[in-house]
Image (tube, rainbow, N blue to C red; front, side, top):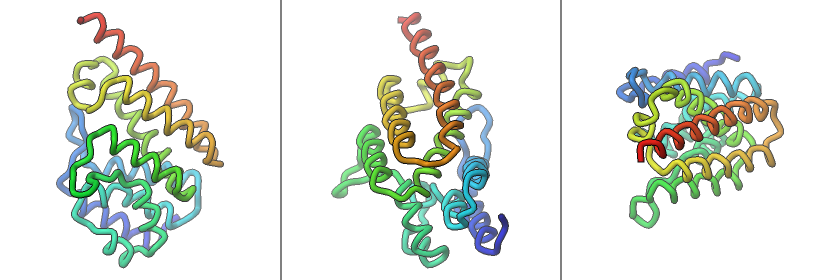
Length: 198
């Protein structure tokens, strides 16, 4: 799937995230995550708006790009999808704590379109794979680099897993469930190593 609109989305993602890096030992450009998510999404849908939204899924959360600019550049449907997968940072002018952001994100997904659920699944597949690969033998590094307790992280992913398995009618669910199983095993190993050091 290649089009002028998709090319514009790739360029926008590259420019908007140009100075951002992924967490971890290797300072990979953030756009590598966006590419991985978009390619995963493209494996499971031919919906151009959905693939474009995958490229741009973190723009509202992590850049100065506004929802109005997003709609003007890529249309109302792309905006709707991206807004659904954007974690709210504030409520009534107050910065939301980590747990409340995750809960608000989940509520948005519950009310959101299937395209947003597909992107959420692809996003978490890539995040979980990256975490397990990067921190497999570096449990202290994982605890240092990622917010939230292990129990909270496990609960948030379980709630998302429940929602995706209940609502999303896509073959990506099999891939999500496989990677999620690996991630749960990783969290269990991290918990054991933390308890040994107490």
